[in-house]
Length: 155
Image (cartoon, rainbow, N blue to C red):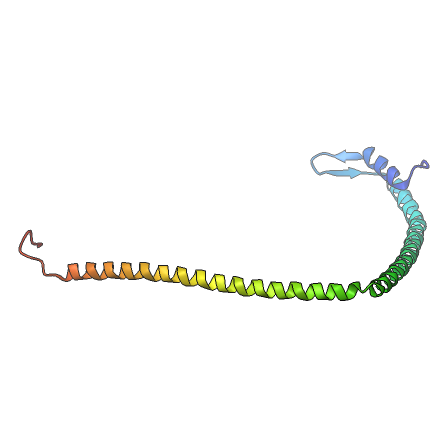
């Protein structure tokens, strides 16, 4: 066969094969098919080896880059920590954080109180409505319990 890639050769073989109507099957030259299979078999170890080398190289480069990045980050962190401590910014930040927490706690207490007041108000309104409905139901029951007078009696 020609010097095309074995996959291309296989595609050409399929294109030129005898197609069996309705079945979706083709008749191909067995010798040519076996030759292409052998070419694929021989090509695969080289490609697999190349890919494996590429993966190993990629992993090595990534590991080296990660190590350099970690070193840069560690150096930057050390410099930042040193400068923060020298300027007493840490103490100011802690005091600010304490104030923020205190304010947040106060706001949470206010929100809880406001929420409780709102819920109590809603429950009171609901209670009034339920009592009004209860009175209406009781009035309806009293009305229905009254004896029917002789007018237009039912049979």
